[in-house]
Image (cartoon, rainbow, N blue to C red; front, top):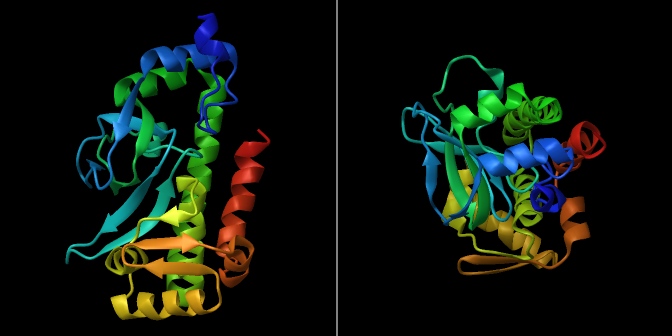
Length: 239
């Protein structure tokens, strides 16, 4: 028990758990490797596992009846995939598609074990409810951002969010993928990327974007990026 409770977990939702809860969590989960473009769950499928990324990140995507896709949130080492299970509504179907966009390790736990663990882990349960609140706000803000803000600002925000979770200035991204994630035409992404590159904020080559000037990219993004980070800090960093 001592070894498990002293290990620092590279996931911000778990790292502040008391020793007893951390031990219970770590003994109920396993470490897995998530691969790029791996689909963890599709809408209406049963959620069999929850994932707490230690590296990389997972995109949460709405899929419409006509096949169009739009990313509404992402989860890296600041979060987890499967937060809807916290509601305990006896509904185990996934509301969104979960797609691995950054490869890396994650802690995986069976859904039933996670829900049982919540009953006996008050600090974990408290943090999960706060994270659910953060995600609800991220969903709402993403919807408003996609409707009201210019593509260049939205692209800046998305690159910053990705950089935070990938923990790297070098991002493997294509214009086609970015267009799908932001719900715009490829030509719009191309123009926005050219504008950011002309300002010296990024360097784009086929399939890769390098962040050159993070402070400048923050200035170019809409206020949604700063608002998301501020809410997370308020709800979880200090709790």
